Amino acid sequence: MNHPGTPPTTSVILRSVSAFDDLLESNRAFSETFALGGFDGIAHAGVAIVTCMDSRIDPLAMVGLKAGDAKIFRNPGGRVTPQALEALVMGVHLLNVQRILVVPHTRCAVASNSEEELRARVAESAGVDAAWQTFHVVRDQQASLAEDVHKVQSHPLIPATVEVGGFIYDVDSGLLEPFV
Ligand SMILES: [Zn+2]
Image (tube, rainbow, N blue to C red; front, side, top):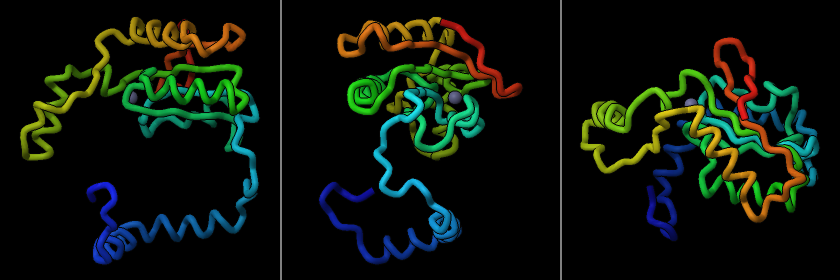
């Protein structure tokens, strides 16, 4: 990664472009039928979702929404981190969010490995020591979900009129199980 403020060199740009060629080609096709130009960026369905980065999760489709309908915040485990709260506060006050779903999921790496196990797996892949890297693993997924929902509900800048729900997404059935 470049130091902040240091412009990338030409060779980095060229290498990056070729590595992303297939995606950029798809993007040009996407742009041909793009209909969200000039869109205001609010959450049209009034929904925000905090969920995991897991590729098995399609956060909009799983609740019948589409681009433009919801604010989505993702991180490993779908945790309500300080950054997630920033996003939710902005969502509620500036972007029409009235309902918030916190959605961890079954078979999540963050909830099924210990910190030590994740470090060991990453270190093995990286070939260097990873003992310094934190992963914020979840030991008890239901307890963490209850805690996370409470963090949102008790936030001084999130009014009680905002509905907050905790759900566990089953990556094998596609079903959301209401939890909190
Ligand atoms: Zn996950």
